Length: 163
Image (cartoon, rainbow, N blue to C red; front, top):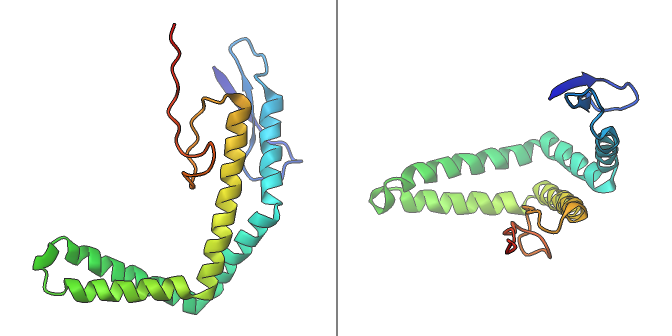
């Protein structure tokens, strides 16, 4: 198959619009590709995505939150290094307590809580879109979602039919 790229100026994303052609030079489902880019635009304009983006910016701009994240990562690294030796490492318990305190500070910081809430909402929205797209094509398509208990979510095993 031969693929060619063509940038359409009316689309606002930075990656090019791809026109797909088969060996005969026929356009392969250009309408589907355009609908996909339109869906991307709709997702980028949702309140959920905008809130997620704003929460991410607020988190990045907060020096205290950044310090809490760095403290947690340092404690996690120390604990993982000590955990290699198991109960024989003399400071394992101390590193474990430091990690627990750092994780508690991380999860109780208001900006981090807001970011995680927005991230979860955005992830659920994307999972819902993926489930709907898969269901529109075939009920047998496996969709891996963040929430494995969601109806029709999680990784599904394909059913087989007897011939």
